[in-house]
Every structure is written in structure tokens, then in C-alpha cells.
Image (cartoon, rainbow, N blue to C red; front, side, top):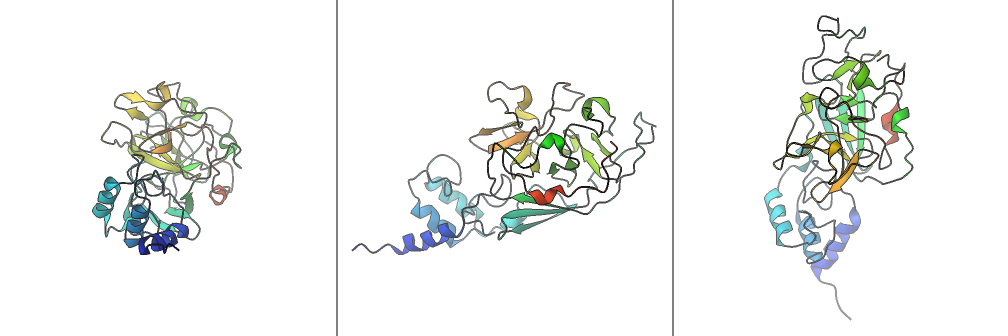
Length: 300
């Protein structure tokens, strides 16, 4: 009778402990066991999967578990994985491994100026930006579906959260009009609703970030767990107009580096044909606790 190797035994234990996959840009890439640290368990999992295409252990996404994954792990050894995320200092981020969520606490007050909304610059809005008390729960492991519980276009209030804690709303104002093409915004493409919640209906220049290949950086996370990137697919090419890897009805697509992800469009001022601007639908099941209704529908 063959006695399993010590590595195989320990590895099997660690693999069975978790099958999560952290959202892109959150946590260590080699935290295979999703416990907030890169350690022996991750090494054993990679070794036990050596030479296979196991997605759980293929940390660099090249299709095979090999030396590259082990080198990545060595580079991340000892890193505080829970400190790795794109959210900025006006938010508080915690990791709930038991419930499989990344939890974001935000007041909704952005890290940039707002307004003015008194008409002095051509934008009048009777509402005042006020601090909110929002808790957003981002699934660590998106569950794909063709029939999500929430229809994005019917949702009042936040449909996702940006890296500065400001929510994205759907494309419409409370009158059913396409907001980016009909309503005024401040220079950061935001404005407050009746209860004072500042929000975006489209990409904001405050969220501008680029990766080294010209692809936009992460600007937020959908409530289904998938990341949202800015407008660009590559340098000078916006994803909304790119026919090489077209976006689906939910305004997302996949690539070998980032997996499935959403893109915002360019703002209305640069491309008036960018509807739905952020999300058209949820590709995975959204976390329902994020949809606590405001006390009144937004006036803008």
C-alpha cells in the first residue's frame, strides 16, 4: 500500500480548507489558501499541484504551476496581504474570511473637492453633500449567473463602490433619463442626491489610474465581486469601442491577466455613446446586503 507523502497530506488539508479566489487587486497573488498570509500551506499547495494547470495554484496565470509561481510566492513571503487593495485612506477595509467577503466601510465623502452646486459654474443642485454610513460587502468568490437577483437598471442607489468609497449609481436619474447626458455634475462627474449621498453615474477623473500596459487600473468593485476598471483596454483604445475583445451586455469581458472584469466608458463629454457608462447588469450574483434602500429616492 502506497503511503502518501507528507507534502501531499498537508497540501490536501490546506486545499480543502478554502477554494476562494480574491478579487483582482486585493490580497496577495500567492495567498493560495486565502487566509491573509503567504506561508507554508501555500508552498505545499503549489508543490502538490506542480506541473498541472490548477487555477488555484497557478498564481501568475500562465497556465501551468511551475517555478514562476514559486518565485512569486517567495517575493510575497511575509507580506501583510490584507494591506493589499486599491481603496484609499478615507475608507476602512477588513477581510471576513468566514463569510467570504471583503468589507469596505465608507462615509461616501470623496478624497477630492465637490461642487459647487449653486449654479455659479453652471451646475445647480439643491442637495448638500453629507457623510453617509455605508458598509459594502464584496464577495471574494463571484458566483456567475445569467439571472441575478438584482436588475442594475431598476436599482435606486449604489450598484458598486469605487476605490475612494463613493458609490457608482446606474445610468438613470429618478425620472428615468440617462443621467450623464442630461444632468450637470461637478468637475469630478459627481453630485449629491436628496439624502446627501455624493455619487457617480459615470467614470470620474478622480479615479484615473493606468497599469503598465496602458490598460486602465481598478476604479472600484461591483457588488458581485468582480473588479471595475477605467475606460482603457490598452493605450489609446477604450474598451467600450474595442471590437477586438468586445464588452458583453453587462459591460465586462475577460483577459488572461485580469480574468473577468468590467470597464467604465469614457465620460459623456468625451464619448456621448458610452451607455451604460458603468454596469449594464451583474454577471455574478450580487451581495444582497449592499442594497439597503435610502430613506427616499434620489432627486438627482
